[in-house]
Length: 510
Ligand code: AMP
Ligand code: MG
Image (tube, rainbow, N blue to C red):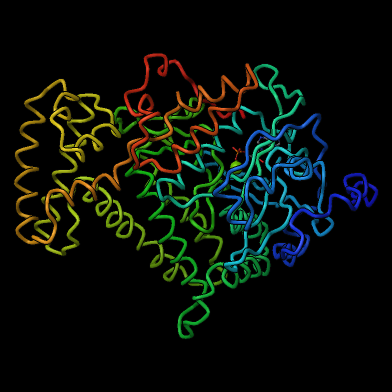
């Protein structure tokens, strides 16, 4: 690291009030420089603070007014580095579309450090799009406003839906010209997570034959993020660690499948060791229910299609397990992995049962099988009839007759509904504590009225890029933070997507 570079980015003392009195640390540094490269951000030309997310600001014990100033704007785009901060880009490897790439890394993301909040939570702060790093390969180290808006909104939409995810704190636009298929504005996303360590971080050291570094990384993750493992003295802590990652990943994927979220690029370098949804690129939420939905137009084989996600997550976990074989036997690794399918299925079924209004957690196998058949047959007729996934479940929750009208083949729905009503009656006999009104309310709390459909993000992007009007971002963020609630002024976003939505094509370009 060139020390003159640091001073170049250092502000005069008048700016030092940001995060003053707060504990600003960087535990990731303690791993040593085999795990990252020191890298200062490249300055961004004419930055403009686009948005600060109140909910994420709160995680850092801050408010939007307190951060609405030039110092924070400069901090958020990398033009101002806090005295305590030593920015780093992490190195990792990963399987991309099934092929092992021996070395990747944060090509355009920089870890600034972490803040410990008043609840003793540590939040790492990362800038995405802050310039070239040693891992940028052919890239320019930048992110464009278009993709930054998508990640900003979607990470918060996932949070609103109750799905583990990295968070978005703020977004900065600029007059920096970035070339993709055309000239676009460079932007920086400030994102937060307890840790950004990926499966690929383990793959790097395992593939290089460096078991000591694998162990060091595992010890670091266990002690900081899975400390409860250390209290279980008689078992192999690394097997417990793998089991925890298996569990968190299975639960996250079950959640994705239940809301119709497709990530698009489930490479192992995009898999969080904490089971967080990370690295939003060409993601998409299902409109009509379509098992083979492929949101990433560059994914020609459909490797990361909607229905492949649970299997791909298992495949990715197996790659992670391989990296830990210096710390456990193959049998131990296989045993940890073998839990995946059960955890995934149980979690997915529980979520889908709740979406249909079955809230009684019984263990009656016949009943569960009956519910499973009901879910599968529903998905089959939804797919055949091109029924909108979100709209169906919301209308079912509202107990309106219009749900039937979503099907072209109304008799197919009627037939399904007979079985559904019988199953509900059975459930009411076992669990009379819940009446129909309560069932309706509970269903509305699991079946969102609003999801971030591509066309909605597209409206916000168009306004922001063409008119520098960022107002839609704020509106959508508010909506996405409360997707189960009624928003009378935003009713237009609760219906079917407009016809032009079909023309949106999302690639990896970002
Ligand atoms: P992603 O698909 O966004 O996860 O990116 C895959 C890898 O390419 C990551 O390691 C990124 O850091 C890197 N990358 C993507 N875009 C750029 C860019 N414009 N400049 C430098 N690195 C990039
Ligand atoms: Mg990535």
